[in-house]
Image 1: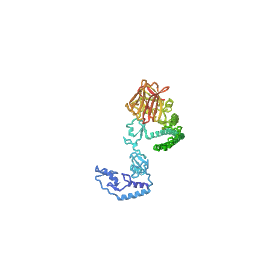
Image 2: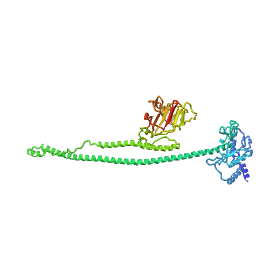
Image 3: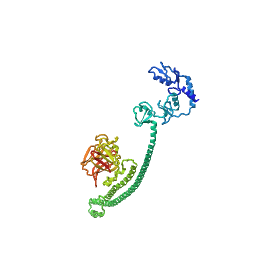
Image 4: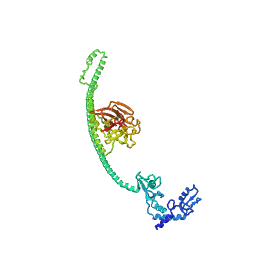
Length: 571
């Protein structure tokens, strides 16, 4: 019954689209096609003026008019309905599935791919494919979306051979042509061998993953510890500063009250004096008016009787005991407050260094944890940097000591790195090593991996002739132009040293310096403050040159050489 159904389906299948006939038409040779399919085939043959049957290849001299065959259409429609009722639910292709190349409309999931047809088929169309090619041996594999990758682009044959000499997949024609005499095996054999090795590699990767996950957890724990410590320190410092501000506020109120009390006492005394002076002035004015009237009296007897009472001035009160300065001074108070202010500022300047050093020690502890996990960080500091004064002694500078390693990907081929990438030496012969986009191929130079975006100090031992520099990462690397050399552009700053001279360069401007007699150099950077300083280190620190500028990007320590032998070692 199933065989009969299959034969019936084959009778009503269009040989072009391999689907059940739609708008079926019968051409003169007797074969049936979909109206759209046969029209498409004959449209392509219009240019040659000869038309053929796609199935039997019978030719026709003229293009016949096509008419729909209603009888076959009715039979096909009944068969279609019966197949839909009997057929199970189709498995349509989803994301990541290989689609059937023959299905129209919504694609069904493909189950096999033919390496001869280069087409993927669902179950239904695979049966049709096998029926259309019963005597041919087509190679069919599990459905794949990379069919073209399995075909030789030169010979259009399936890759069946693996060339171990060239480590590439080839077809059998390539084996007797370009790969003649090479070590070759079948792709399945090589696949089996590599699959065995893959397990060992996978175990190594899993071990590395476990190590990195452990380091990741340690780093996260260290970061959380740092955050917790920082938050606790912030809260405690806020509390203490709040108490200090409250104490200062109380002292401010007390000083204000003292000034106001002194003001009130002086004003009260002055107002009493004012009142008594006003009363005396009023009495004098009254006597003056009486004397004016007396001067106008013509009666001699009346004048004489009145004169004695008017001519005697009123008794003046002694006001010499009441004195008010015209310029009352509170200089003593303001001087005391000023002294207190200066004292507090001095205390802050002295103690903020201790606070910063303690904070930096905490940061260094966390950075050491990070370093143990092989994670590279750029050196940076907190916003409290602006409050910190510049170090003075070597011990002060060493509080900001940073660890740097040289980046081999930037090193010129004449440079040899050693001591864990912390020593570099210029040699007379180039090394055979790969060149990277970051490699200096003209100037004999190298940069460090780690950058500086805060306060940092490091020391180096040097010999020969070369440059001790800092540079932006964006400095050019290719060629001999000034844009590549440390100190000869606006991207870098460089101290140039030799046994006979010393100088500093930036942006192609050179400054001569006194001859440096020591082999140890200290470099100090305060990125935020825009400070760069070079020191010679012996029993004491001697400033060689200081720069004040504005750094717009992270700085990276770098070294360059112009003579052989020369070397630099990070301490």
